[in-house]
Length: 66
Image (cartoon, rainbow, N blue to C red; front, side):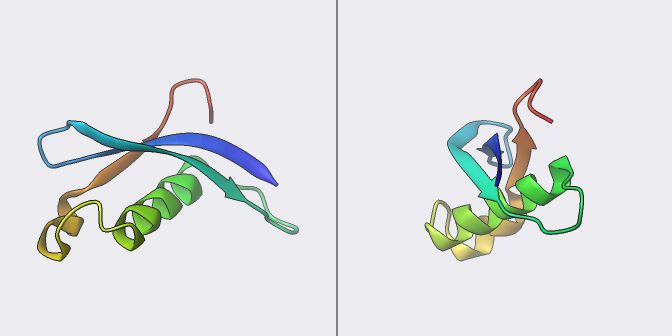
């Protein structure tokens, strides 16, 4: 299992939450995009923003982590 710390930002580039994202990958290499996509899914599931604002969220693996 691979772990990264990922920040999720609103449309104004304000960090709204930080997730520890853990992904198990069999026979494939994980990249930053995989962890960022998972963090956005987690934010959606956790109702971090209203549904109509979810498309404005962005995610970024913390520096030095990917």
